[in-house]
Length: 197
Image 1: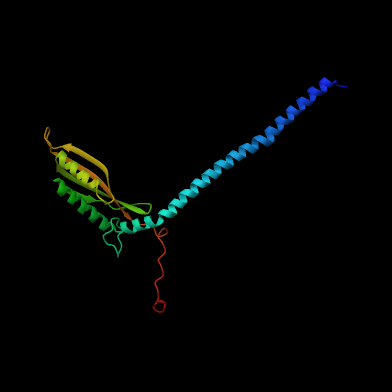
Image 2: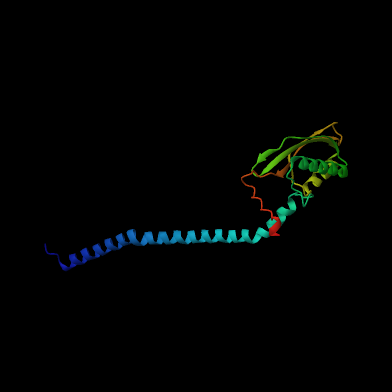
């Protein structure tokens, strides 16, 4: 079968178009897709690296903050307690102090048993009291601005007498203590012996 020059040219052009199409589909497109994915992976890895560098740079500050928060034998006045009774007592004192300065009458205070949440334990405190709208505002503002780890979980306000600014308030406040499990606690440092001093 003899093809004319024109037919040979059409066959050659058709073959080249098919060859270019196949090369694009099997070589060029996968290359650009892999290149785009590699660029995205490099950006993700760089952002993770930058974040980890920031964490490492912030480590001394965070360690100092934790040291200031935790109550230990050396720093008994730490804000974040490690013993439930101390945390409950600290919250009790803070609530009564805030109520006294706000002229808010606290009538009852009860605390529940601590419940674990990760490396912390949450203690719920139930508080009831009587006061005006202004005293309730001052009391809540004092709790909000407290340096203690307190959170108001629930608040119910009812009027004692209709049309009078005399309110019954029931609050559920929670505080936390730091109580890591034994597996997440750091290992104790060995104490120096008599000859190693």
